[in-house]
Every structure is written in C-alpha cells, then in structure tokens.
Length: 232
Image 1 (tube, helix red, strand yellow):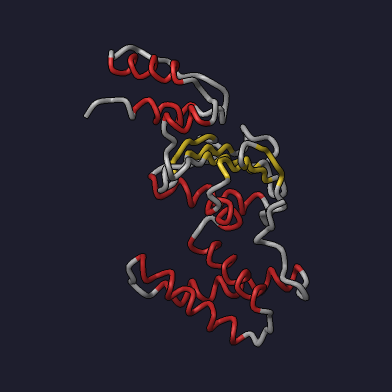
Image 2: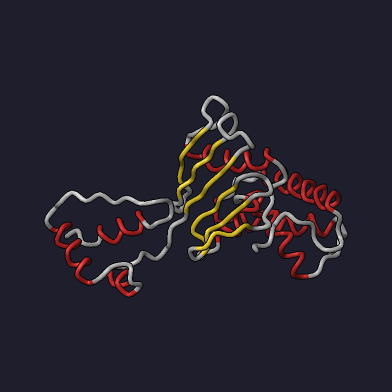
C-alpha cells in the first residue's frame, strides 16, 4: 500500500488537521502572491514561509511527521497534491483515480490500490484543472473529456460528469526516464535476436509498421526502440 499524503499527523484529529492545512495554505499563498520570483526561487521561498507560519502555530510535531506535513502542503500548492509522491516514484508507470478514495497504481507490472485519498470530488477537479489550464485546455460539463500531457511527457486523460457518472476520474500514464534498448528487450525475453534483426531491416527498408496492443502493453516503449534504428 502507498501511504497517503492527506491523512492527519499522529495526535491530530482530522478536522483540526484540515483546518491547519487550510490556514497554512492560505497564509503562505497570500504572502507569496505579491512576490515576483523566478520558478527556481519560488519553491524555496514558499518552504521558508511555510515553516515560519507553522512555527507561529506553536504546534509540536516530530521530525518525520513535520517533514511529511510540510511536503504535503508544498505538493498541494506547487505540485499535484496527493498524487505528487506517485508521480515522483520512478517505479510507478500508471496512476488511476476513480474517485476521492479509489486511487490505483501500476507498479512493476502489477496493479494495486493505494490508500491515497482526495478530500472530495472538487479536490480531484482542482488537480485536473491544474494540469489542463496551463496547456490552454479546459474541461467542464460541455467538454467532459480531455487528453493532455504533463511537463515530463506523461499522458493524462480526465473525464468529468456527466460522462463520469460516479464523479471525476483521472488517468496518468508515465514513461521511463531511461529508454529501453533493443538489447534489453532481448535480455528480458521480450523478443529474439532474429526478431530484432528482422524489425531493424523493416525500419531501414522504410516499411510500414503497425504497433498495436492493450493499455500498458508497451506500445510506446516498443516504438521508441524501433525509432532507434532510424539512420541519422
């Protein structure tokens, strides 16, 4: 199971935790709104002001809980809220949000449910808007489906009511930062040396090639491998 970034710290009730998060987010967002800082300095300034605001609350938290608490709030303001730890995990290849309390991942080829939770459906919609608005896209009841990409190239599909009858849903398909090579596919027994030689000849011969398969079967990965055969 993947730990949630929304659960209250030990010793704090859920309502108190929610109020504290809302107070800190509102405080540091307001303080930072007047500053015209470059992106590389903005996050550090935000973290400094967040620590100052937390110190003023006189709340005592242990080191690990305090760090997680601050990271959760930073992810809420500058990242993709509870999804940010999943996006930062290189072993996770897909994230599926089917409701505020139904978040699944694909990790190392296996599907598992996490205990990541959103506050409510509006929280999911907020994150969807954070993804699509910078791209000049929008999603609402008139345009209830949208495809987009995150800055790192991850593919995003979002669906909202009325098409999503149980509330907004969000799927993020991530890609490996290190591209697989044909040699690795042979090593993994994904194909034989003879198949690799044949496919290389097809690419060099400029033949038409169709790559098809189910979700998560490796179509894009295989396309990247084949593109490596294209001469300079």
